[in-house]
Length: 133
Image (cartoon, rainbow, N blue to C red):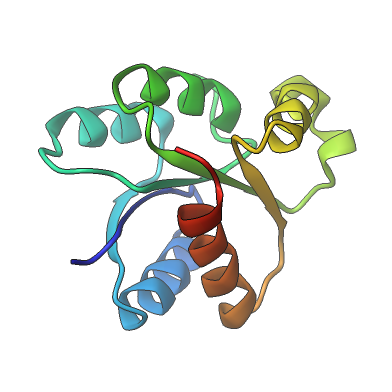
């Protein structure tokens, strides 16, 4: 059974590349380019979402961390993999400190941009298989 990843990325080229890489590796990928679309998509998806792969800095509505907290209310088993082109220290306004705490508590992990396809797939695999539900 394919694992399902909810990908939230506002850069179209990055989104398409991630989808291509993950689908080639057998993952089912749901895509959203805003936090609101991700919430709607999650609410409409009848199956399990194994992983939220989200940029730390999303849009004016909410950060990736705020999105993860909302989604975990209805999907507590969902793992989270944050990504950003900035170090977490620079993401204070977008939940960097809270994300760091999640990582320490093994509730999430972080992958800096840019990344290679092999780094992407390894981080997705590890997040799904090694983070506790």
